[in-house]
Image (cartoon, rainbow, N blue to C red):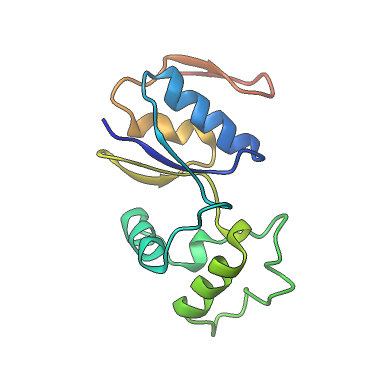
Length: 132
């Protein structure tokens, strides 16, 4: 099974998601999107696969979201994609793709539904235990 994760190693949720994928026996394709942002076309594909709008892919916390005025409902998808391309930190993470689907894995255990052999129990970095 091919698993791809759009990952930010500075994000605890992203690290936990990556660890759950690996604990489930998969070595994913890891795309550090801050270094290699998805193309415009790829952003559109991901949004469609997840069933969310481009705006729904934006992260507000710890980003220039407010200062860029990205809460303006008149902004087009192209304008929002421009903002993500300029400031990749705006992309909500982690996004995981598998043959079972594409999902924004917040909380991190949302990834388990996308895996063939999900780990039965996992302890997150903060000590929270996830059991299935």
